[in-house]
Length: 93
Length: 118
Image (tube, rainbow over all chains, first blue to last red; front, side, top):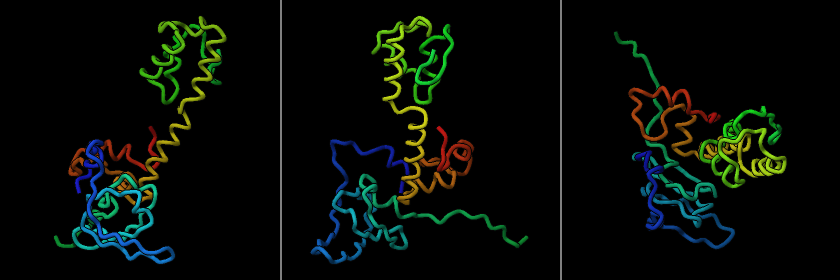
């Protein structure tokens, strides 16, 4: 994921990056199953709020629950792609 | 002379005095002076009381000082709470905007925090 993509924002006249995602509309009272997706560049739309997505990071699918704050962002921002850097001094000389 | 609770000496330029508030710089101070038809090189002592009251009212309606600082900190903590990539970078003190981290990250180390000042 290119982190500057969020700042070089997509032009408004183009509309958000809408990706066809398999969203299941369940009747009220039932829990929707998590939506597995590799589309990290999909913009989060208002009708996603409350759903759980499994976003790919190259290796595993991260669970992301969508809240109201997340609406303008992309799915990939919530699924980290790199392990945190830790310095381990190896004992080999 | 008291503007918005802060005392200014009489012979100081009004433009410079307005710019001492956090959140007001060149652009905002010029706009405020133009709106109230104040000469840009006027001193604080030359303003009538009516103008001072108008300036105070204007300043209380803008987001400056503590309101602005709170807003900035809120923006960053919102990113962190959501669990975004940007929030994580702020928390770790690394560059947020995609710079290389192999070298030259001193500005990021100094400035990028969750409680970032200014």
